[in-house]
Image (cartoon, rainbow, N blue to C red; front, side, top):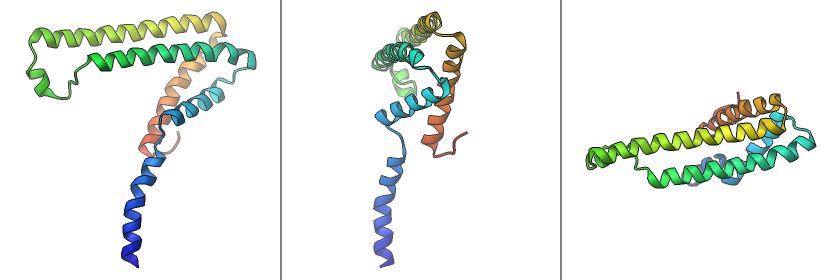
Length: 146
């Protein structure tokens, strides 16, 4: 009987552990709840904030998708060894270009947010973004909330 229980636990444990890690839609729900709490937006501010935020997320996701499609992993040194110096240099400068595009997006949406919301809310938003990243990492690690 103990062996049967042990075997059952061995099959259920990985499923249980996987179920504890947040996934796509769950992460989005967590993010919305987290930002809603941290920003404490009035209904009018929320009507302004969320469409801008959603546009920003869409542009950032498109940029990240483009980056992934163009970038060869630097973790595999054999791939780098098989490339010419010019190809490696192109990969590096391409990464700089993506970082610049990401920074430009940040600046674009910072300007949009500060044009229509009080600057303190904009500041809370940037602080909340960092807080959410920490929160998500803690959840993935199985750690406790800070």
